[in-house]
Amino acid sequence: MAESERRQYGRIEVEAYPEYAIAAFSAECLRRPTTTPKELEELLGNAIAERAREGYGRLSTPILTSTSDEALIALFGQLGFTPRCCGFVFECDLVRARQVEVRAQPLLPAGIEARDLGGLPSDAVSDAFAQCFPGEDAQATVGLLLGSGSFLPWASSCATAGDRVVAFTMVSARTSAEAYLWYQGTVPEWRRRGVGRYLVRRTIEALHKRGFTWLVADQVTAGNDGEIRLLTTCGFRHVADQVRLSRNLGQK
Ligand SMILES: CC(C)(COP(=O)(O)OP(=O)(O)OC[C@H]1O[C@@H](n2cnc3c(N)ncnc32)[C@H](O)[C@@H]1OP(=O)(O)O)[C@@H](O)C(=O)NCCC(=O)NCCS
Image (cartoon, rainbow, N blue to C red; front, side, top):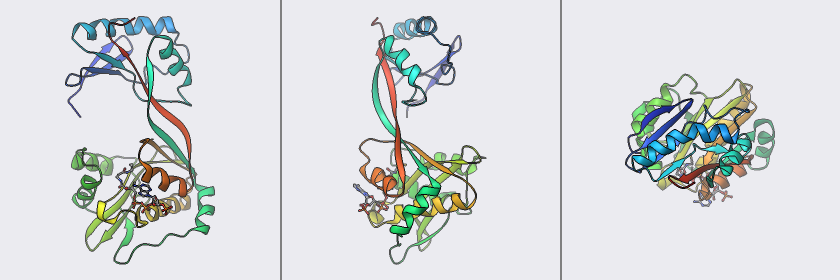
């Protein structure tokens, strides 16, 4: 991801990516039930004019969720912004999911062991992460997640072959009842052997034991058939779409 730069326009913060000539709003300042199209147009006016002068081609919203941001999506639509689906939100009712489990207890392939991710050296996790998400800065992302206060080391799982991490789930708490699945991955040579599903089931068990009732995964990409199949067979349901709306600058 290119370096970004932030600027404030009244209560709207715009994050700009000079390399891509794209600017995006921060969502929090927009999520107000009272915002009218007129108010929003006024708020956006300066940002649009200034960014257009600087040569930005498009202005985008942050990622919005079809269920919780319905009003905001409609409002941007009225201002000439067009939506593009960029992912799905999946939710798992942990009580129900454990009943699905009875039917299909997954097994790990020989030579693979599962354990909690907590306590493992960050480098071992980063190596696996880098193979699963080649475009991302593995060390920085893993370091940030493992060090964050909401990270749940006992619910995040990993599979090892000897001392090598070959798969993982990374989970944090949103509330005392709701957990969030940040990332999950299986390194390419161990894929499609049930390891990913085993770890998600293990994570579901651990969360349920500690009284969590929901596990949420969002930004699940439309074409990620493996992840979608994995989640739905573990009891997750598709509950919303995520969209980004954008508008050409200079165009009314
Ligand atoms: C998505 C991912 C985690 C799946 O891990 P995995 O260990 O291969 O998953 P499993 O072997 O447990 O597969 C579970 C189910 O999904 C299916 N599946 C897995 N990969 C698939 C693919 N590429 N296309 C279609 N189905 C797939 C399996 O066939 C299995 O279903 P089945 O038992 O009905 O046949 C793995 O492909 C991966 O790491 N991808 C890159 C990172 C990523 O996209 N992570 C998810 C977003 S955070």
